[in-house]
Image (cartoon, rainbow, N blue to C red):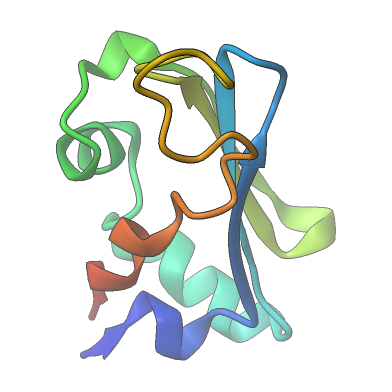
Amino acid sequence: MAALYELAKVIRSKNSGPFELTLDILFDSASTYERVKKSGKVTPAAISKLYGTDESQIHHFVFFDQALGIKITMARTVSSGTIGDRDVYGAQQHAPLFSIEID
């Protein structure tokens, strides 16, 4: 067992416009990427549970083999820069991904 943050080279988040957030998980080896991909631990259902949102709020979920990465785009609960937004750039939203355990 290893935590996702121990396996990934980069885990980051950023805005994808004012109403969406993008999560990127990038790996530096094909074997590690395949291990995570085949584990079944990084799924739309798992992401929606981690972020406390409905799975329908995940707009894109892609295993991008050529880049050894996973890209997830989901609706923001509060649009960027409005009242109640605590992270205008969406750059601090990747931490929940750290808790995913990979077999």
